Length: 398
Image (cartoon, rainbow, N blue to C red; front, side):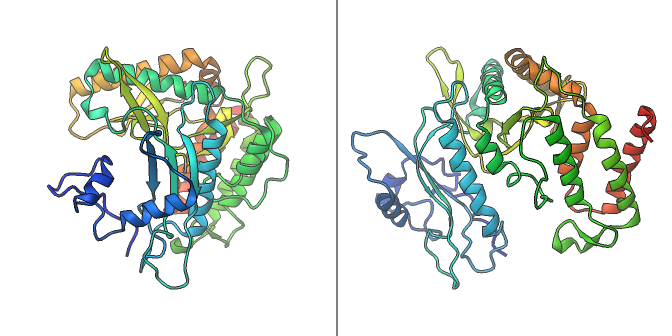
């Protein structure tokens, strides 16, 4: 089955770094030889937008590694890919020029197109075309220890600016349900709004969409799972718990204001420049196709570096996804990274820390729902239901 192309290689077998593509093409050394034709890409870009490259700004084209028209394609279907591309393009247009957020300027884009018969050109791949930002990607491995800490601080300031940014209401209304993780509710019965009432409705709709009635199909079609008695009972416990674990609205902090999430925030999705003093700084945050919109109380501050920088349920800095061969010195370094990240993040956006602490229980529920991948729904939701029943007893809400 075909999912996506392998990462392109240079003639010497090393990974292609994205540089000097036209020069390699002229020399007959295209890293995409036999996969797709670079000249076809250039012609399509020229058809989409007039370019003058000799003395103009550098440009950057991002072409999907997946071609929906390839035989035996088994990647994300086109009905999933199209809204991802459209959402990403909408985000670049929305955030370009917003202070502190740092996104590249999108010049032109198109969605993938599916043909009835297999057709190997570039139309089966999404294409986005940017004014190239200053700096380079994938620099983490080349930085020294102090530089990595500085880069984490720069990243935290961007994450804070994104959390603070006030989303236009029409953008939230249009995209919030569309960008929810599966399983999506067909509708949310109240209008999208930065209120506790909407958050209650969002969570209720999400649970109802995830766990249907007893005996109904659930999860993904290929899982062939149905709602059993344990999952059905858990659903009732979760629905009863929702109003108990959502704090009342607070005049001092905006727990329910709507926040734009990147969805894959990390150094692998950043362009970085190192100045004359050797200090790195993020110049661009890209790859927004997995982004979403959530109430602030459900926002996820995770940042991916060599490990994932996270907080525990009380907002205390921590880290996960640790390499198996990590030693004591590595753990000391990881602690330094996560402490720096959250120190800067919470200093720049103090309401973020308050929202994490205020939403301890509802965040556990939300992230547990998000983590489900279709495995053993009776066991998975049975455990979540037991947690809900325990919390109801503690709160006297049973």
